[in-house]
Length: 394
Image 1 (spheres, rainbow, N blue to C red):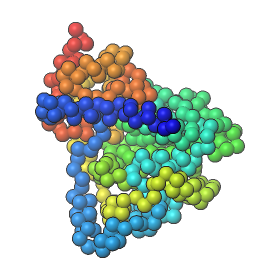
Image 2 (tube, helix red, strand yellow; image 1 turned 90 degrees about the horizontal axis):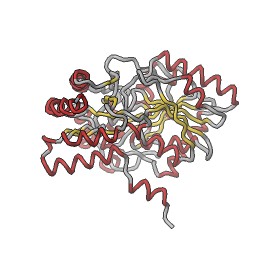
Image 3 (cartoon, rainbow, N blue to C red; image 1 turned 90 degrees about the vertical axis):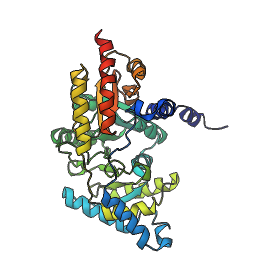
Image 4 (cartoon, helix red, strand yellow; image 1 turned 45 degrees about the vertical axis):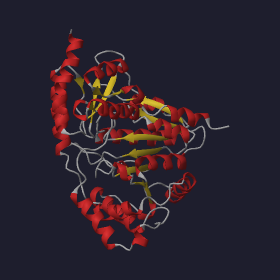
């Protein structure tokens, strides 16, 4: 008998992927220029030249046997040391290379970490809206998922709601800032309040509660300060990916960083290594590890994303849309002009506008618009957006 839960997941892809595949089909039918695909977070900013140059140099100068061979299961020592030194330099935080585990991107980081932490029946609290795969990853690890809605006005954490979500079974809280899908950056005041709450609950329940800080969008901000959560709360584990910051989503490279301030950091790291072994997530791609080692300090040019954000945000606001201005990432979270966001998305297809309903993100009545596209696509799409909103004005 095959696993029916896996059959169900395989037959129903994530709503993001469904719309992305629909977009590819429409582009083949009518031409890519006529389809306005805002579905997926695939960076449109070119990979920094320093990264490409480093990769070329590594390929030319490295012994092929080493280049294409296995590294240590947890990652090459050089890249782990470079990442730890970069964390120390950027955040004045005592990262330890022996507590860093290289992964195939943020998805692998989250999957490994949840399997390292969770025993069946534990709870994982996820502020909503959230990236839909959090639920999939947490449930597969054996956790019960508890949603804690953010404040709708600004999508900051609602600490009173989150406190009610915490129980003696809570093992972890997933914090994603800058946030997918809202673009919200949780303020330092918010993170400090969250830390105080979790310290209080740990003492009350006599058990550790961990923050899993999922940070693939950390570098994509528009002037906002992004607190480095391990400095505020000891029991913090960071999941990082270079997919967005260095425009390398197809290369699948990232890491887990276990805070040395965790009381049982060594044991927890051993659990991470064990989970990586069980899941088969050992020895992340060697070429990408060596590339990260050389490019650990490279940062992206967010100017294009900011231009896209401002162009789309100003136009949609003019057309009558309700949008909370994002401080990071490359998404607009737009209130649907009708209660059913799926119906709104279907109506938008008449104009070849493709975006994602917020229901799967844990927030009904909204849609996510991904603006990591060519600026020309946004400019061409504006008449379609205007026509769509005019239907609702009538």
